[in-house]
Length: 363
Image 1: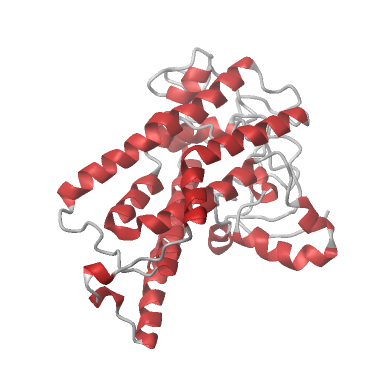
Image 2 (image 1 turned 120 degrees about the vertical axis):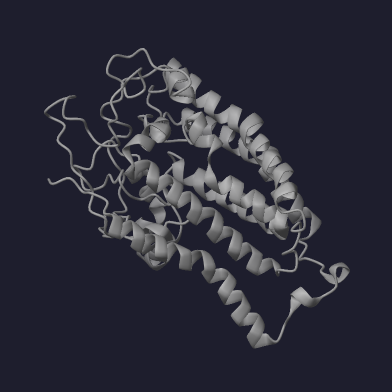
């Protein structure tokens, strides 16, 4: 099959659509405020009392964003292991990589990035702290959710569509299994430059931090559940009465079926779609940009066909540390392969590039 190329025209088109999507929540907010005659930005600072959830709900979300999510991930991981869902594929090298990628970003990298961003912004924008604190809570949720997740969609998509960026994201796709063990599996450079973290930190500085707390928690739940090897979405496809809800669900957010397809090691079965299904919290971006497929089925295998089981430290710290595996993308002067099958690996692996469209079939 002819190799798909990403034309500059398509990127320009999708970029313009993205600009509109970023602006849409803000424009819609002002339209509604105009229609209702409300002008919350004119209120005195001490009158700008933001929405505040009941203390017990707020504590749930605050705890979830700190120690809660890691506890849930570990608990689900134990369930997955007890059910034998990893099928003895969690070898020592893979386990070490997964554990390091789970712990280091949460303990060091992400807190440092947020701290650095919030420390630098007062010097760059000295008079902008809490300037948008007047934004009503519901609209702040909408603005944060779109800005954060659309930015991550593009960050993710470009790491698949630009070959030299692929090696920074390759670590996340090298696992031959899905589940809590590999959900945080990322190269350190990919994590440090995780674009939406800086954006969300900036919006927090500008006064939308309370909404960011809730959006971040909900997004963590959705993305974590989408990586799980527990196929919680299957009942929605099995029972006819739930099909209308399933139709909306799978187009709105990432589910195990749609995200597992993104981690497939091949596209031969018509289910795998590693050059699409880029959505993190919202699968809606893939629908809008035509980069998604929906099959309601699961791939038979995951990972990378040309995976050489590179050392955990090379996968985590490349290009700071290189792999000793000959011919590896992560070795010194390694080839830039991209997320496709290199012809030199084996003639039996012919490249099949997914078509950027949305289709549906029932099991």
